[in-house]
Length: 354
Image (cartoon, rainbow, N blue to C red; front, top):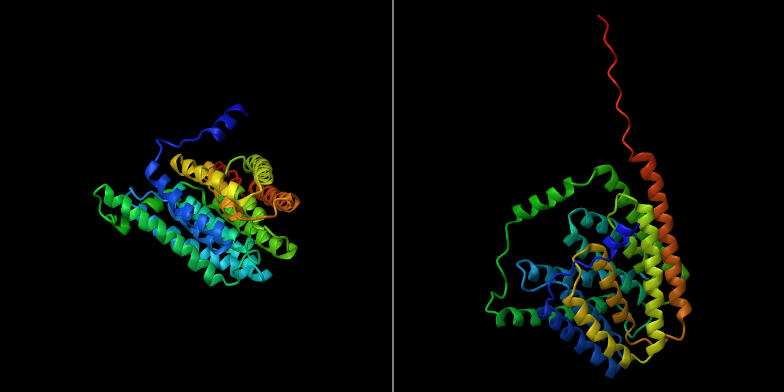
């Protein structure tokens, strides 16, 4: 147990990356300040798109490509979640597809899994913010999200130019991508991964449907709780699922306490911007810690202009329901893994007579 706890708390952040951190702070700071002066929720989507794009490192060879993918796919996911929020079947289908996509991307390595986690967070925010702000169109949500990402890409081009680097780095061949992805996929047992994919699909579908049927505001507290517990862990999945659910509850209580203590949007933004800069500077390499780190920032961005922190029971109820759904799916996956994924004993060869 002690070794498991030490492995879970090891950060693996590496040296701080202050260039991308300042880029994230400037990218999120301008929309948030404009949102404070205008009280328009559209600037929250621009800040969310800026943070999503800032997760990529522009100095890396694939950094600009990843930034463009994070911006474009994140805008589509946020707009799709906002559009499907009023339709139960569409919510079920969109979250089931996102759960399956997350499982597929986790299969091809940590970096692809991080990309999928960011897209899942955008879908959760899109559905959970429907009806809360000044926007009533999924296309407008996606467009503002993309504007925030393009603002960060402009800052990334300026960073690369200040170091004398090419504005758009040379890309490796597609064949190299395919070989690396195939190598990652071959490391996982096919049968165990299928169970994980089915569990992700079921968890996403139940989460999206529960938010739609309950009708409670701030539904992304539920869906983000479910999505953060879905990780590629083929061993001791039930134990890890319980630990992640308890961690989500503790994290939600801490966030609720901070929001109830500050309450003022100006104070929340003033405390959140340094947190975003430090979080991006010491971004975790470990997939689970990266998901927790970015989820906290996404929630704070979505809640930065809210004035209903005097209603903590809404957020706590959504978190409890999400933890319950995650535990239910983890238990079902554990039972299926015990029955189906255990390899059958080999038949011994019958002795041949003389």
